[in-house]
Structures are given as C-alpha cells and as structure tokens.
Length: 222
Image 1: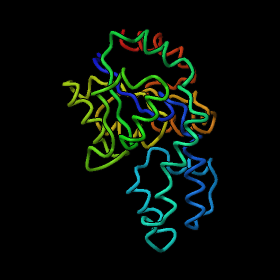
Image 2: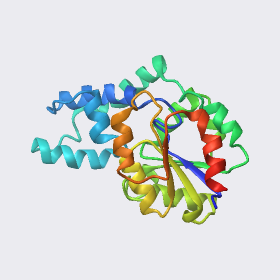
Image 3: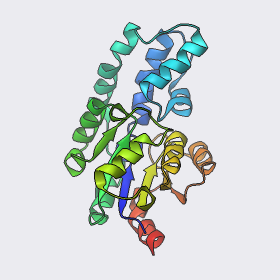
Image 4: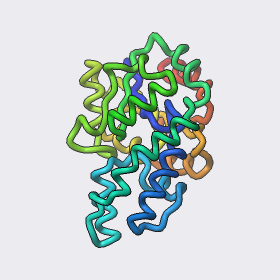
C-alpha cells in the first residue's frame, strides 16, 4: 500500500537538468575540470554541492569551493531558467489526476533553487510546506536523509512511500530509506542511457511519459 508520493524536483517536476548542467559545466571548466553538460548530467545529477567539492578536490588536487565561478553559479542557472525553464511535459495534468494522494518533494537542490524553479513553472503552491532540500539534512543523496525527512513531515511510514526519481543517486537514496521507486526518463536529458542507469537500481518500473503515471500508479497499488 502506498500512502504518499515523494517527488524529486529537477527532471521529474521541472525540466531543468539540461539547463542547470549547461551553467554547471561552464563553472567546472573555469576551475579546471574539462567537462560538458552531458558529463555533468552523467556524473553529478543528484549530488549536493558539498559532495561535489569533495570529488573536485580529489580530481584537481586543490580545494575549489571558494572559486568565484561558483559564486556566480546560481545567477547563471536562474538566467537560463528565466529564458527556457518549463515544467515536465504533462506534469500539471498528472498531478491533478493524482490529487487525492498526499505528496511531498525531496531534492538535493537548495531551497532557493527549488522555490525559483517550482514557482516559475506554477508548481510551488501545490507543494509548499512539504518541500525537503538537502540543506535540511546532514547528508544528500544517495543517503536516505531527504526521503526520511519527507516521510517524517508527512507522518507516514517510509515503507508506504513511492518515490519518483530520474537519477541513480536519488533512487539509491530512496531504496536506502526503505521506499519503493518509479524511474522517470521523459525529461529533455532522458533517453536510453538514463534508462539503463536507472534500470541498474531495480526500480518498480521505468516510464518516459508523465501522462502514463496516474494509470501506472493505480495498477501498482492494486
């Protein structure tokens, strides 16, 4: 039985991963890591900032957390969001169809990022008061902390939660929390490669069309 659906935000509610990756790749090249937007998606999707800096220090041999490029990252991301950010296709209709089911958000992004992205796409009011950021917990994904915090806010047993995720790290965190998961590959950054990555984490199912979700959810809980 599923009592609550917990959503990842970027790539599941808002079609943002490919946009954020453009800005992040620019910053990473400025600090000396040769990488493009697809490389950011493949390596760092779902990773919170402090974990990223640990990886960069190992690879570059120095601490780059104070580099000016990262001080400009939010502004670069938000500039792209203002121009190009869209909700995931079909998400408003899917949420309306699932409306009787309580829902929350559990994300590795900052509250500033989440509020901007969800507000820009007309989704913030639906989740206000039920949004957990990695800033709220000791560890980001793939640790289970954000998911367990979301279950606590919703006053539900983690085993009765279903997570919608688009990243292997996020799916690992959901499973570590004792939750079931659906993998979503229908955002702009999705495709066969992402499907294979998610498949390796053994979700209950993988889908690529948000309009399918209400029907898939109904079948899953029967």
